[in-house]
Image (cartoon, rainbow, N blue to C red; front, side, top):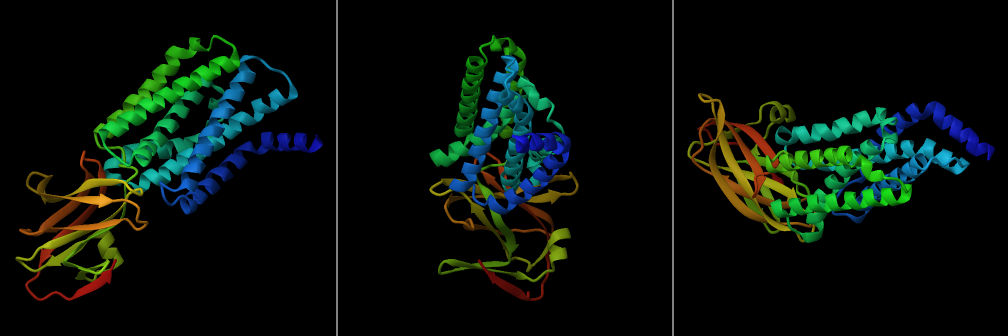
Length: 360
């Protein structure tokens, strides 16, 4: 008993430092351990956090609204907000890891910034987690963020219909959770409905706007590797990729690729998809029109991918009729979500090229 009292006092005094350390440690662990979105362990971690948050919200409000005064009830009032904060931090961290690996930051930055912002400010929101409306609203966001890729994992299909289904399922789950709180608290919980559902519907609308404007990363798809090459040859089960060697700094700051006039270029992509997920993607070649300051589509190449390979499903497209200047290739889903983006600068060179090869 004395040990528990000392531990409780320690947590009260140092909860800010404990929370900060847990945030940093948890983010590092998530980056190292969360590898495949379709892996049982990764999903078990997310489900554990979601169930933990739900149980703590339920217990905390049962104690708070029914004004329970037992020693156990008082410990729930102390520890439940801390556990809620910890579990939400774990969820935001995991979602940022997965969503940041999927899509292009240039198109998905509003959603990624939202998750990163929630992860950071979660550090300062313990007091907010004692408020029912805030608890349930953020809980709905985490449920919806998980359902967005859980539904495709189960159905082996992606597209607008499956996103809409994930939203409807999320609304159904949060409605049932609200009913459970009403039963547990034995109070007229539905007096909270207007403000609560205003927050939930607002998040539902924002997520739909993000999806249908192609801001939301296209989970469960993610780019594993990509690049532009002068030549690609398939040998047995491998691809031999050839281009002039460049330094890492050159590729990072000014990805210049030399081309013999009249020759074409190859774009290689390796895209991770969950096992048995069969879909089509698009390689969209664009050049930059300096006069009008905008990207112009030059060609679109469609091909199918099949999920299950750790290193991603490999494929390439070929482009002729090139011009010198800035180019990019967008790898997209059929409904326009950007999986990856490769920018490069084309320079013509009449001399023979000294190509270096790599095998993937």
